[in-house]
Image (cartoon, rainbow, N blue to C red; front, side, top):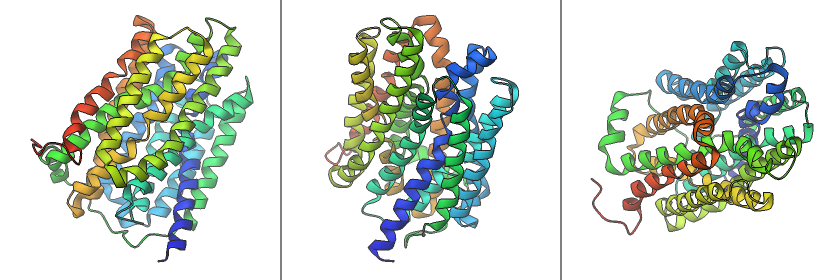
Length: 398
């Protein structure tokens, strides 16, 4: 296929990924309004967010074990999962806010999104080898914009949360239909079913093991920040403005932070293919960790300063994500690439279940500044793991 077909298909995939992944943070974006309608406890508020992560892990493992995306056209798997996830999200309109049914709907939505993100990544890497960092970076940038969209919709919707649910569901369904128009690249190939050997090599192969560990450090910070920075900002802004104004500005701030990060995924991927994928992850984690600490230190200060620091944090917190997967793909045996990338994603999102669930509880016990500072531990661990993988790093990979 020519470069024109590649460009068109990648652009279609990017748009579809953006639309499909917009379902992820719907409940987090509308949580204050839902809580006022349903008097949702702190524990159930956390379950609404962590349920998506739990569902995603289950879905990712199911797809890997069954080989579903390998035996079927991945575009059809993507489309079916996006459409079904949109319907599960719509169920929030009729279920009691914060009830068991609503939490179950979020778990189902997360499980179905496992057929959107990893499957979309598989389609993307089929279009290139030397520009793999850029291709995966484009996809991660798209899903990041998608995850920011509910916050913008919630900001525009004001105190009404149901229009946000409906709008995002329609957008996700449209993305599911759109992906059917994308092509499959010349490097697209069948990946194996989930194999226990893939688990073993994840820890016995030194470079893959370090990429996994770096990814875990990244995920420790990422989803806790994305899911709860809006709640933290509301408390911070409320020091100097009324509650409703603080909630509104927090939504806009969260959207800006996540969306700005998406914009930097593309240049980060381009540079990663040239200067080194590990180098990009180290720089990104150093900046995001520093931003987390600075946000904690200035908590409750001038809103403009908090907004700026959170925007910087959002810019740095996501561009490294694609490169951990690309490093695994570069170092894995060709016949195990699919299993190892899927397994990496499943383990990383398993970690986020704990961080997303525990973050608001820790904030209640220790305060938001301490929790925000604690998120910097993840990037610190990730940097240590990735240092030996630099192009000029040490040769000791043990």
